[in-house]
Amino acid sequence: MHNEIELALKKATAKVKKFNQNMSSGGRNEREIIIQNLPNAIDKTSGDGEFIFSQRQLYYAIRPFVMEAFGGKQLNYNYFCQVITDYEADYGEIEGMYRDPRGTLYHPHTGEEIPLGTIAVQKYNRPTWTFNKIIFIEKEGYFASLRDVGFPEKYDCALLSSKGYASRAVKDLFDLLGETDEEIQFFCVHDADAAGTKIFETLQEATSARPGRRVRVINLGLEPEEALELDLQVETFENKRSRPVADYVPYEWERWLQSHRVELNAMTTPEFIQWLEDKMEDHGVGKVIPGEKILSSEMESNAEDFVRAQVAKKILEQSLYEEQVSLELDRIKDDLDLAKLHIRETVKEKLESNPHSLWSLPVRQIVQDIINSKD
Image 1: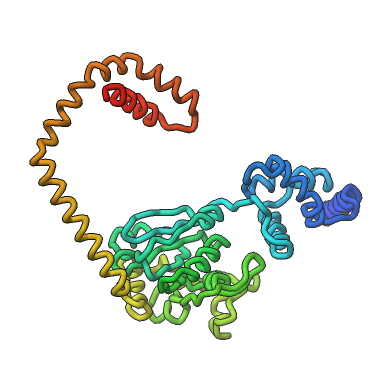
Image 2 (image 1 turned 90 degrees about the vertical axis):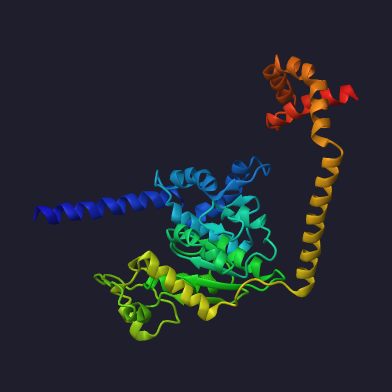
């Protein structure tokens, strides 16, 4: 009886709290409060349009409006992000706002790693004739293992990760790469679970954040049927709610995924690498080999570089180049020693007049002035 009274009091208190929140907000819901105050929050966050700003900064500018309207209620960040996504789908992207990096792009042969956010994609330039494949992998943990065995270089394949679902930056990068002149294949690797099937589907198909890809993404799996054929460890869990599954999944496997999953991590590192290499052999287009025009141009460029290096070496040896350098350094030695006595003060003064410079630039300028004074 005591518990029933306590429960009834809690329900009554919740109703009163909700009524008071509705009264203080003028009957408006959170979405309406966010959108109504968006222009003011954008102006505040951007310094009236002078600076770019992150989505999280915009959240903190909006939050006080929601708290005031709903009696101190906290604004959920994920809900806020969904409202912003819906708003941008209707009215276009918010100018000056960027989303923080949520994933990494790895270039084969160069070893370059790029934290992937909206700003990085806007500035991205594909390295020419370096890779003709790119794999989106749900798990970031496999990056190090694949790099360690030289997988990206062996298959001329870029690696791309985003924790969980592909971010809009990932989708934009796929579309951007698809518009370049060089041939490229797109692949997706994911867990054999309900969320994994949706990760592939939302990477390829349209969402509220982005329209569908303008390129075809090849689904490498892992799919449930293949996972069982590989005799991988299956996780079983209680089906408390319906889990969304991608449309391409057959009905019997859709039901299976409501209470079962197999993660990529069920494979050992050697097993995963072999599995992925087998997929590449089945679907990949082979190594990057440019056309004859590019290859001929590269050959001529290399020939010129080698010849120039050999000729320069001969000329330098014949002209006593090293001896001439030593003589010139001896000529400015006293001036250099004198400048070293007050080098920190001089560098500090130059940096104060040009604060965007690195300390090495003033040092270079001091040396240049000494050499010029001797001419």
